[in-house]
Length: 240
Image (cartoon, rainbow, N blue to C red; front, side, top):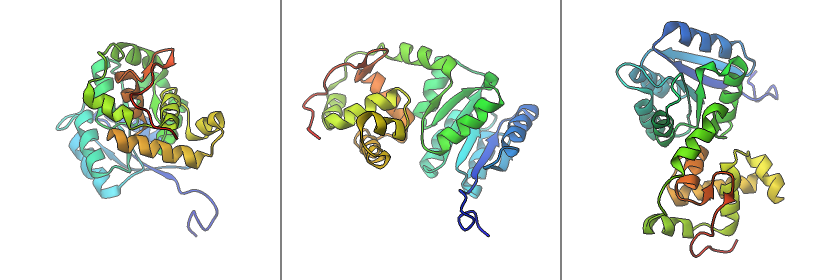
């Protein structure tokens, strides 16, 4: 009997890539013993991870950044280009800003430090699997504070901002706060399905892949400012 026939959700299918056997084995053990999560493969390099992902088409790929042949950032970029439905969770010991931003720009849905603990790892996999964004709490404020120091948006960015409706701007602001579709819907008194549609529209208008990139775009364009929410009206905002 299938999971659907049994009335239960199918397991989250995960691959794990890390060139350090002990660390990789620890991640696999934590995830494999968790109900509702199935580890469908392991890889020791970025190239191996990409080939494994193409073969197994997992829901989530847990990748280290520093790996031989192909690092986790480039593996993320290639994986997202070929398997956009697979969510990437970067789990690493590196908390340097350039690694974080590079991974998220490459298409990673989440970034978690290896000292976060087993429960945080499991929660992170579940979070990115359902399409939400995740950043390790210990790096979130540092990341945002560093990268909001950007000049005013140029004409091209301003034009893209102008395509957003007022409701879409509300949604972007709340996505940047880390809220889920259900939580945003509760705030705006709209259904989660309607919020999902707004998020999809924002992704399309900005040419982004996932919610994490919405967060980056919101801060980099000045649409949202650390601690202040919405900064200014987008140029020529549309009603709706």
